[in-house]
Each structure stands twice: as C-alpha cells, then as structure tokens.
Length: 81
Image (cartoon, rainbow, N blue to C red; front, top):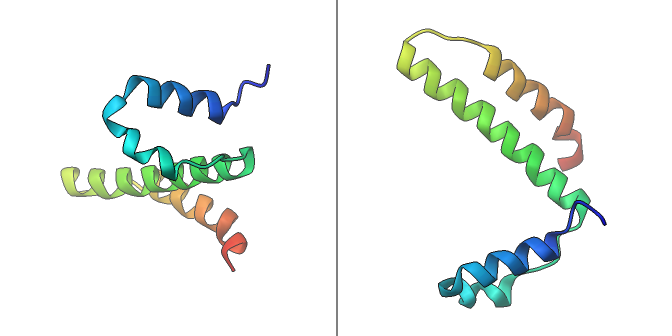
C-alpha cells in the first residue's frame, strides 16, 4: 500500500471533525508533487519564523535558520518564475 494517501487522510480527518463538514465542498485531491511542494514551503516558513523569533528573544543573531531559509528559497525560486 502506498504510504502517501491523501484521500485516506482527508476521509479520516472529516470523519473525526464533524463541525467542518461545510469544508467538504472545497476539498480536492492533492498529488504527491503538490504535497511535497507544500512540505518544502512549510520548512521554508518554519526556518524563517525560527530565525526571526530567536533573533528577537536573544537579541543576537544565529544564522543557522536564516541560512537554511535562504538555501531552501534559492533551490525553489526558479520554479516560481
């Protein structure tokens, strides 16, 4: 069985969360390529947010998350042009 099953995940989600049935009309199949794109976008945001949050809290700049954010951005920016 394919470990990636967005349909099974969505069915389980909607069976557990009944008050969101209004959203059923908007659900669409998400293929693996789109899912992976969202995962990469989430990683980019997570590194950016961690960089920003840690810089504010500590008052000093640790560039690990900033560097990773830039690397992810540069590896995907060509797809958006």
